[in-house]
Length: 493
Length: 95
Image (cartoon, rainbow over all chains, first blue to last red; front, side, top):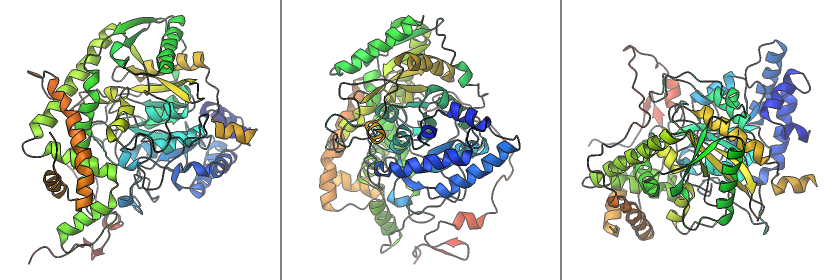
């Protein structure tokens, strides 16, 4: 059965169509794989009964010749997407037991195309974090191990989604990316992760963190599979006024392998002091792969890169402090009683939120408070424009940018916990594109000397996911990344 | 600029998060460090730069002014910590 869990979505769709196996068999194989990888703690809520029921219906649809684009494909759903009738927590105690009465647009579209839901995956609480170490429901463990066999983080915030796809417990997964929460865990877990342009996918029914930055996207084990998932997830939604009224192209068709007409920019500011030699080398290797495939490599400059993280850590907490004001113990979620209404609010929020969420609400409240609003928030929005204009200028010289995805491979659980800023630096290469609303894809490109995966990121212009998929496809082909997480290869041996 | 314990107490009040003295003391140096770090933006010359809020120029669409949703009190109240006769219940706020 295990070959069913190692298959790509594209191949599984062919296998289902030619009746090599049924959706129920495919789903059951993944439910078994989830049980075998339970120690990763990837899920907050598993939904095997729903999955098998959906799979049975899928088999009937296929029998009737009415199969959708993803019919019968078992997926994991980040527990930030509201799913009707299924607990949705954002990995926060304050939402423990919350049962949405509606379905997020993105999951509704996936289900309308026949996808099967295996469960809801863990994340950093309210998507705030880079290691999945800030979940109320415990740490998620990366299926990859270094030579010392210590437990490593899967990255974050979409750590559960990335870990379970890497561990072959799901064929693909949804994620959300505010400052790198799809791309960085994809890099840490050796899989592909795509954050599309801000506005490409509806945010309706996705629990809000920072509304001007949040964007749903996809994880899978190939560039093509990510394209297939995004095709189903994307598109205008009248219920999200920031979702774009643009046609959704056929993303998978963009993966032609031909990049001879493209110019690839290498932003010099991403050569950070202290960048590990292995990451610098892999980046250079990536540029050579693209050059060998006929693309032209050009040096470009994004002069405000060094200010992107500080800009992000004003804008994102400011928006979060407003968005999270809704958790007041009145309409849903946990309530902790107090002497009066105000004390009920304060007790509820004090006991309901974890430390990192509190820190960000506090920073956000501070930068928005009287006397500081212009100095911090407006200033950050001005620098945001400068960062965005850097990209606009760079794209006058090139079609896509190539960068490392993250400044390190997966680190040990507990590392970077002493200092919040050290954790924030994980997103140094992913935050700038988020600030500018641009699409970015992370593709696994190699292993470091410790046996851990490293990803390369391709960033393109707004609405040009097709070029990101096209370049990503070439990196995938050249890298021919076939390594398996040690926890899987050991079990197989 | 460092954030002292009293500033943090005030911000925690604005954010409606109860914090005891131990928590305030733990959080003060952490938040001060983050604020010091984000202050690096003061180096950037932003004279004559307009703030950017709408990042990909999506124009907000207009629609007909009519009710498209509602009539689902049960769903609205389904997750309420306490409800009586189709109302959310909180402690008394008017004397």
